[in-house]
Amino acid sequence: MSFDTLGLAPALLRALADQGYATPTPIQSAAIPVALTGRDMLAGAQTGTGKTAAFALPLLQRLFVETAPAAANGKRRPRALILTPTRELAAQVHDSLRAYAKHIKMFSTTIFGGVGMGPQVDALRRGVDVLVATPGRLIDHMERRTVDLSGIEILVLDEADRMLDMGFLPAIRRILGVLPKQRQTLLFSATFADEIKKIAAQFMRDPAEVQVAARNSVVATITHRVHPVETARKRDLLLHLLAQDSRRQTLVFSRTKHGANKLADFLEKYGLRTAAIHGNKSQGARTKALKEFKDGKVTVLVATDIAARGLDIDQLPMVVNYDLPMVAEDYVHRIGRTGRAGAEGLAVSLVAPEEAPLLRDIKRLLKQDIALENIAGYEPSRPLNFDGPRPSNGKPRSTNHARRPHANGPKKPHAAANKQHRPWQGKRDQRKA
Image 1 (cartoon, rainbow, N blue to C red):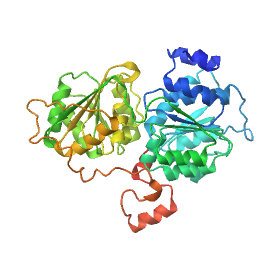
Image 2: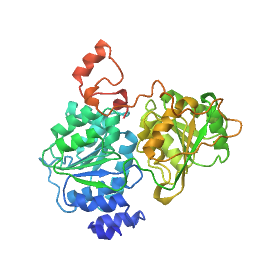
Image 3: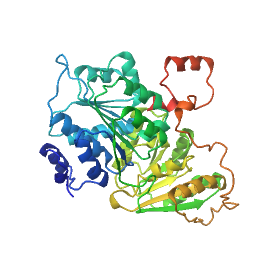
Image 4: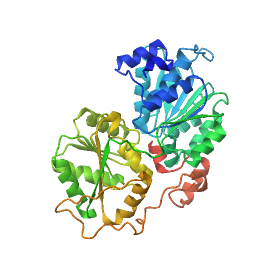
């Protein structure tokens, strides 16, 4: 199958050809024809499957090829809204959108936190057709009345499951509540959790379901390796593994921001070109680190889950779980950044004895065993006990945020008052996105 068979306009086919794209991915083949009909759609797709084109191409065709823009009082207002969980994903979606619209007259902009609102307000005032936004910053503009969402014809919720994990459900509900009822809604998610289904039932009209891969599945080209090691010796083992090929691009996942900084400093000290990205980094620092990693100036990128969500890195040969994720599904999201487009990928996990129950959960989710490989000189003092209790802070995160509005525990009185003033504001990471 080629893009020519999907019913796309010549201007979009030219843009795809300009980028060297000739054959659609499975999610593109399944989703584009459905989206072109104008029907609401629930699409199951993970990062790296080509899902951005699966919603961007039909969006561009329906709004800017098949129909003419209608200005309100001579001013251009957004006709499409794309919501993403993180700044990085918003920027990448926007870049892809502009590339696909190369031969179409279309104005777009991104709005997200971590940068000043002035330039965003100016862009909105000048008028845009497509708005790519993170929920927290979009709410800020709604409160300041600097954005007009009354003309939205197409809404895209990208990586909806991750937005729920980050505590954005109240914000999403608030945004959906002000959008026109007559619109097309396209929801993309790696999983169809109960809250996703609830959103679909409440805000979508008879959505078509498109699922190109089994829930929480991983590609067959990824090799999984687990190296047992004591927590205190993890960074030495990581240095040992990375030193085997210091030119190999590697994405390393740390559970905490502080841990990511310490690990990056350690690796840099031993001569590895390393950078860290997490929620406490400024947007400029995060953008610079990611660009240098993509350009090969940095070979090791240490990231937390939230900061790394949506990273689009081609030909990434290895992902390392320095810390296992507390939620098994996050393992799938992490390693999905390697082994793309049929390429071979390697997922390495450094597992301390106390993390064995987390590895047990991952193996159950994947429905496959992962062999343990001891590295001489780094063996732990005791074997991994898969029947032991989970780590004390390893309680799985609920996606039912309606029942736990204070996800980080009881708030202080003044914070609680602020919560009432801003009911959409959940976890701290919302504002970081």
